[in-house]
Image (cartoon, rainbow, N blue to C red):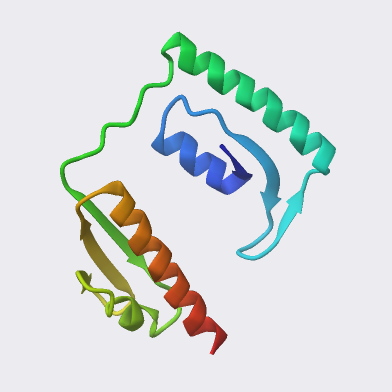
Amino acid sequence: MTGDDVICAVAEKAFPGVVTVPVKTALGRTATRSKHPAVAREAIAAGAARAVASALSGAIRPVTIPDELAIEAELRPNGAAELAALVPGTERTGARTVRYQAASPRTALDVLIVWSALTSHYLSR
């Protein structure tokens, strides 16, 4: 997995054994310091090779999908949770928090995408 140093650390904590390649350093919520593209490409290729080797050796195991897939989010802009709660099946659990019980990982991802789009739209008003 590639990304900034913060998301790579989150992935490593959530998925032990995952191979991450930080290609940028987070400087804030909307700013990063990126590696030169050539350096990033080399690091990604090396990381991909390590990931394939780990998978072939059995060191990386598939994640078990739980029977109950609940997603919860705290939406920082005031008012964004109100919009997200309009998505059918979404439960508003607090002033800034929403929850959704998903039947599948794909549905969970779709809901997260919609929540993100609504929050982005709310911020652009």
